[in-house]
Length: 320
Figure 1: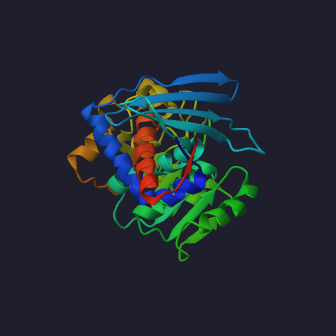
Figure 2 (figure 1 turned 90 degrees about the horizontal axis):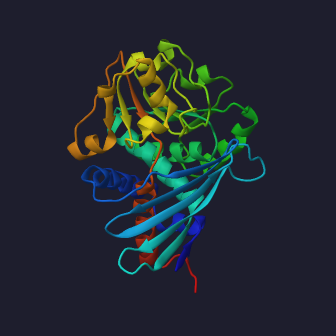
């Protein structure tokens, strides 16, 4: 069994390769050639344990991940991915689950930008500068010629450390702006990515600040969590989702449906878009929304890629 920690995974694959893998996962999702039971959630006050299995033609993958949002001295996400042979049941690889979650979730945002953003969008706002915010920014810079990144976090003292960490991943000519208000962060942005676990909307309910943008919600994954304000559903005639489960799992989808702010036929699966190769254009008086809650299929497809590339490059540690 091959053990792949964060440094080995970084050596094995690039973000561009992981974004391609996400697109392949969408095609697999659209074909139905997989088996993925509903993920199990075990709640302990604000803390969550997720168990996410999935079977494809190539492998069986299981992710065990914890989300402890109030952690201060430890990462908020911790876990493992176990990759098992479909043919023999042999455990092929054990991967750092928190890093797999980070890069695959970043790549989900990157895929959304690939298919939904204007080709000349070059200003990015990251709302929530935790681990997910970092990989979202990295993926965005992979898919578009980003020139300016505006950072906002509820606790602004975290911004300098995040900025320094981000600089190690992106071209030196990209300007990073640490902002003290969310309005300052989003005013000039073409792409806004929300990566928080907030229970109430993090974006202002102001159409002037939200029109003609691609807005991505990546952080919330429960019905009680919301990042999008109500006015956003008036500005958007389409809401793209990564999986049909987002309709019942995300407050950013469930809430507007219940309130009648969003007709169900305006919700579009990203798998349909990716498989159709349709070009999406953004109207100047509208915005485009993308909401992700993630799924085990992403973890398995990305882990398969990492495993294959690691074997090719001879990285990782064999466990006996």
